[in-house]
Structures are given as structure tokens and as C-alpha cells.
Length: 287
Image: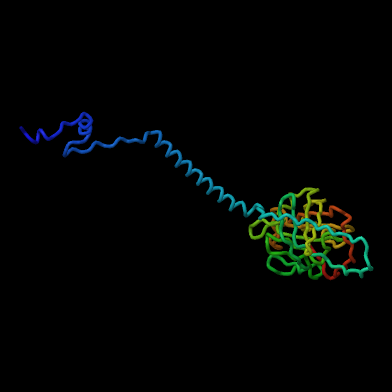
């Protein structure tokens, strides 16, 4: 008998099938079947296109925001005005206190509450009026013309310290840029204001007062009424002034129109009376 033949067990049917599936020596293995169907490939392409489209839209929106920021006022984080503190009145005074010297309150913040815009206020004085080249503008008689100073920032408003404090009897004068270095300023919203809007002023002592807009007017640069810059208007008011319009005066380096917003105390009982301040007659404050 052939020992090799007898010692080799016969293959089972399963083993025969496995052997049949294996390639013979020297033959190449059959290619593996492609398990990814056409539907899966289509889904991957669709997902890739969606992602690219979202990225493109985001880039376009970002570029649009950068361009619009130069011409549309986009306020920073809004800071709500502080809640006024309630002062308790003592039941009885042991002795009559001496009169407290009057201290003029300084405005340090302004809030356009309905528009959720807030910004700091800086005090300015009266300065000579200059043209676009820095030369002083003279009156017809050759005298120097004076005007209210400004703050070189789109984020800050200016208050004329020679005028009334907001809430005092008299006219509190403020100005601000409609734009500065192609960036919209805090007063760029003045032409859009409406009667009845509220403006809150915060003072250096932490107190606040609320004012209500009564007038929104547009004037030519040479047609602004004298009452706009007057110290004594016969009442208590704030006057907010900014440039307006597209017409540019290259000689003076400013626009040819002014937007003027007048606001008065919401509660007339809060108006503060103080000794009248007589302005220097040699200093004519121009708009």
C-alpha cells in the first residue's frame, strides 16, 4: 500500500469549497468587489459641496460686515444705565445744617436706551474756529470766531463745560461726529431719532437723569438759529448737534448741514436751578 496515500485524509466538502475559492499557484487573486455603491459616492459629493458652500457664504458675510462697518454705526456692547439710588429723608434734623455749596454735576455717560447705544462723554471748552487747513476763521470785522471744541473719536460725545449741566436750568450743549476716519460715529443716529425717545445721562457722582426728545431738525450750516447755541433758552434742555448730508464744504472741512436734536427732562420737578452764568461777550460761539 502507498503510505502517503493512506495517511492523507480525504478533503471534506467544505474544504473543497475553500480550496476552490483560492487561486492556483501562479494565478493572480481576483479583484475585491467594490462595496461602495453609487448612492454612497453621491452622498459624499453632496456633503462636500454643502461644506464648501457654507464656507463661501461665511466669507462673503464677513467681507460685507467689514465694508458696512465703515458706513453704518454698529455699536459696541450696550451698558444699561445704573438704577438711581433712593435717598432716605431723615425724620427730624437735630440742627439746621449749613448750606452745601453748589457743585456742578459733570456728565460722563450718555445712553440712547431705546436703541441700546451707550458711550462716554468728555468735557470740552470754547476754541477758535478753524478751516480745513487749520487757519482761524475771522468774522467780517476781522475778529476771531469761536466755536465749541470736539473730540477726535467716533466713540465719544463732547459736552461744552461752559454750558449748563444736563438737568440744570439752561442749555446743555453736546456734539459728536457722524463719522470719523470713515467709521460711523455715536451721533450718526441723531437724524433717525423721533420725538418721545428717551436719553439717559449719567453724572460723575453716579446719579442719572432721563430726558425726552422734543425736536429733530435739519439746518444749513449758515442757517442754524442762534437759540441752538444759546446758554439761556428759558428752560432746561439738552441740545445734541452733528454734521448731516452728503454735501461737503472743502473750505471748512465739514458737511454743509447740521442735525440738531433737543431733549428736555422727563420729570420737570427734577430741574436744578443754579446761578446764571454770563458768557464772555468776546467769545462768540459759532456752530
